[in-house]
Image 1 (cartoon, each protein chain N blue to C red):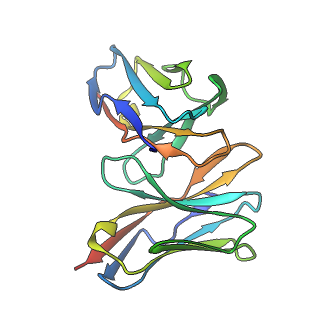
Image 2 (image 1 turned 120 degrees about the vertical axis):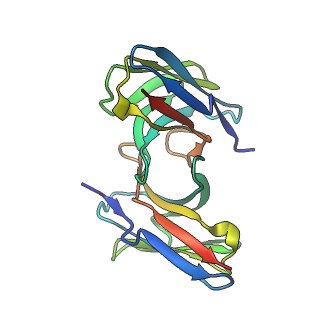
Image 3 (image 1 turned 135 degrees about the vertical axis):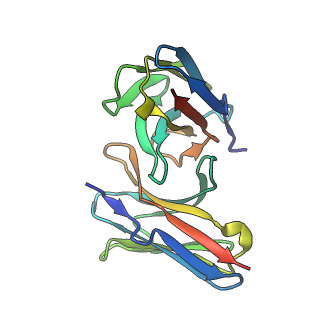
Length: 112
Length: 112
């Protein structure tokens, strides 16, 4: 089983809203990731958690705040986003930070 | 600086024939390479990978070839099926910085 789940599937929010994206995996993976993908572009890495600790932050603006409450869950808290933040947000997990990454279905975010 | 490139944005292949997707990279420090398949509004699905110490890996209809001296890899799909129509991303992983770098993607269309 290589399933990574993400909720919600779609999200529309205003620039003053606060919302959260959720990601879950039950494969016992100890590394989890957030990627952002704009249309016709490859996924871009945002954050990496390894053993529930933030190991990589790709200079992402502070309006994106990741959280890893436990080894199965990864959240991305959103606040004061801009319209250009509209994208597909992908979560991935891997056994460890050097193993093959498996992706969730993504959350399609639209910022109005 | 695009370290992983897929120079063909699109490719059309007749059903039953061989599909060959190409990928070039510039960083000789990559340790392994992967191919992902992506349908619209879904997350990338892992297909096949190859270590930098190998030159070929095969899994069913999918074969990946790596030419380290040319910094080139290719994915062969044979026979091609209509369900193979999707965007294919090659990706490269570096153990040193533990980052997965995606190529720009190739849209494959299988013509019935």
